[in-house]
Length: 88
Image (tube, rainbow, N blue to C red; front, side, top):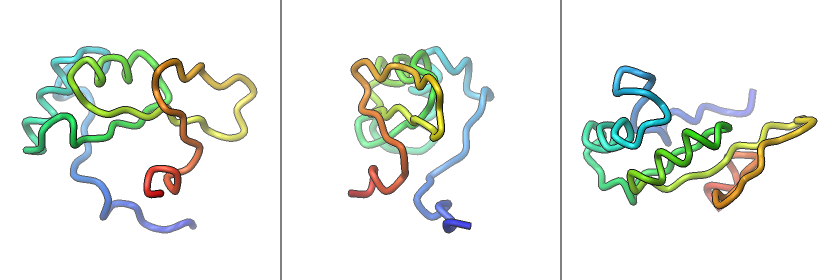
């Protein structure tokens, strides 16, 4: 309903590259994409996944989904509520 965002994505990755809370998984994803980790943004609502991605050198953003009665604490990850916040 709000538009097709697939043109902004370089790939879809699940656990085929390894566990989501392992930094090595994000290094393998960066290799598969062909970009340096620092040029990749990983968005998740799971802080442990974000921690692993950041350990691999990937930029991170915590997705806070509305309405959320108790959103996870962002910690050191920037929090976003919409994709507009990434593009601005």
